[in-house]
Length: 217
Image (tube, rainbow, N blue to C red):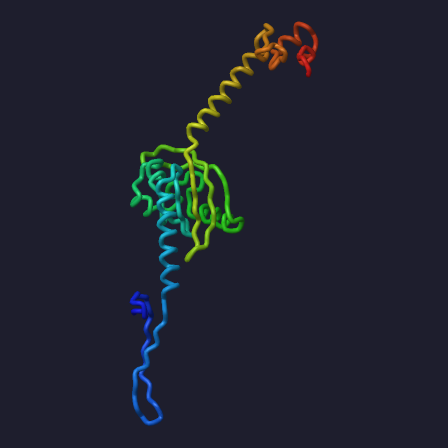
């Protein structure tokens, strides 16, 4: 419709037939100004489009799940991470890629815990399209929009976990070497003012606790 100044505005029209006391029939039309409603809808649409662009451009993987555990949205980062296309992922259930929760029942139980607490942060393993297993750190949040969903952001921590495992193996090899070698050796800081490690051989040779020769500050 047109305002007095010539500008257009959206309206909702409803019409009904009315009969007066003399039997004259007329059509009654009621117009409702929808300007504010349309502004709100457009602002919401812009916000949703912006949110989608941010999620799509994110470096971390993203899932949106319904409360049954079905994947209803994913971003490009997770497609690259898993090797699946977006269309393939949207046909899957969480349990199809989850290694630690490989059944709909387990997934459903976890979703209920997230609903009750509002969010959860945990580590898990996902099976990629080519069969590889990757380790992921997940932050999941329960959100109630027009419907209820679980939003999950995740990052691949496989390399970090492998590095941690190698470090633990190296430390174990060092411990076994240190405990079984007869000679004495030690590790100090660069200034040689503090002993970081003294092998058990010290106690056998000098018959005293190794910490006794460690400088204290």
